[in-house]
Length: 89
Image (cartoon, rainbow, N blue to C red):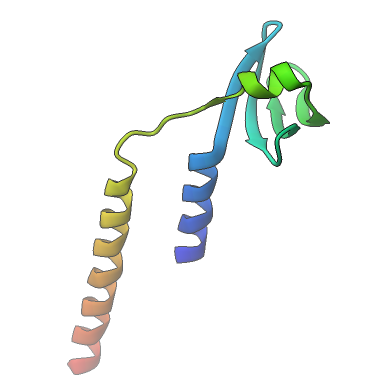
């Protein structure tokens, strides 16, 4: 479960979005120019972008993401305490 949450947080932090020639793109920049994602008109995209297009890819800003870590820590501690109580009984 923790691995899945970690992958979700990593993808959420690194996801990019842009509208190019009226086509909406959302996905990840693997390196400076390689884009892997979804084009809502044509499906999956795995291609090299030009310099200008790669710079135009916007990061989706998620404010106060650190609250997610505190919630995750609370869930983990709750499960540990709950498991300890059931073993004790």
